[in-house]
Structures are given as C-alpha cells and as structure tokens.
Image 1: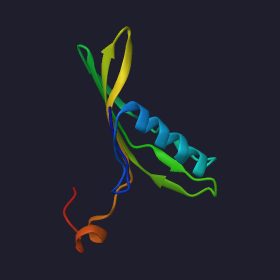
Image 2: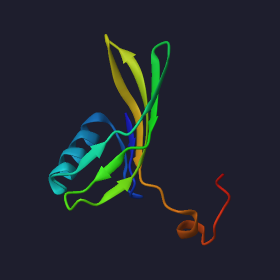
Image 3: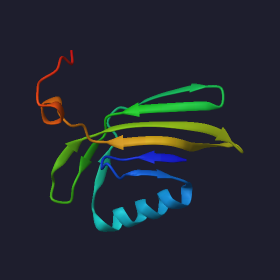
Length: 103
C-alpha cells in the first residue's frame, strides 16, 4: 500500500506504517471532518479506482477543498486500497509565481 498526503514528507508505504501515522494525526487534530463531496468510482475486473474533491473541515470551522484519488484491488472477497493520494491544491501563482491557463 502507498499513501501520499499534502506535506512533502507525507509519502508512506506499508499498511502498518500508514495506519500508525494516520492514528497519530487523527489524535493531533481531533475533531477534523472530511465531507465526501461527489466522488466518481470506476471498476474494471478486479481493479477499481475513485477520484473526488472532498472538503476538509477543521475543528475551528475552517473549510478547505481537497483532492483524493485511490486505487483498489479485489482480494479475498473484499476491496483493498493499494494506493491513494489525498492533498490540498496550491494555486499556480503560489507555486511558480505566475498564473497559468487552467481552462
């Protein structure tokens, strides 16, 4: 399993590592909520994937748009996440110093 988060150092592999980090982070930001939005889901044989734009709601009420993708593999009668990416976007102006075409 691979999980990629927003911060540069948030790149984890292995179920044990990922669950340990997530448990610690959830304790550190107790009360955070993730509202699903309208995810899109697809399947081809034993592989599935989703993409969505959830909203992160912090305990102080601050809301941030996010992006999520995940890949699933059907194993032993159930779906297992094998890769996911959850992050918040950074405007191009902040990243490269100028506005770029996006539409």
